[in-house]
Length: 110
Image 1 (spheres, helix red, strand yellow):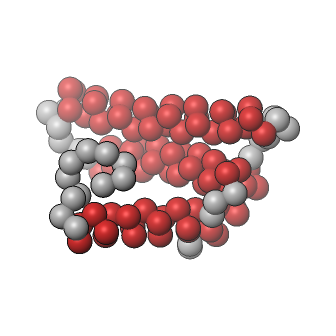
Image 2 (cartoon, rainbow, N blue to C red):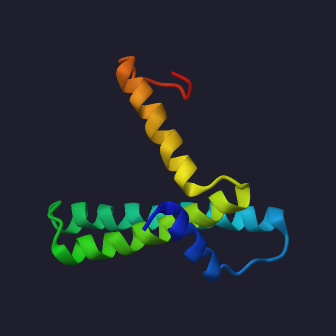
Image 3 (cartoon, rainbow, N blue to C red):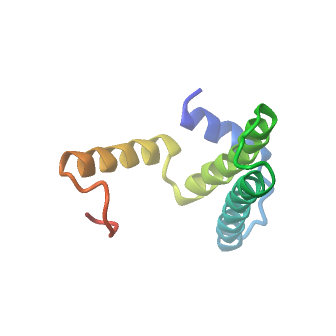
């Protein structure tokens, strides 16, 4: 499955408010909430399980990562930028940084 195929399928499960701005805000807040759930699960693994990630933990983390992916897909769609394109642009950016020896450091435009 490509990112674009995932995006098109994810769109079949969208509940829109009908207000483009509210929808974008919903996607961004949802994205942050789901990313927070990934972080929270990992925090508890560190705190309660001495940083040992079990197969069950991996499956639970994967579910949360899936929720992050869903929000990314619908957010990208509402921005009018295909998820495949976003993925390729990101890889191109990182390759350029690697080629120029600036993977580390600070700043968006390095």
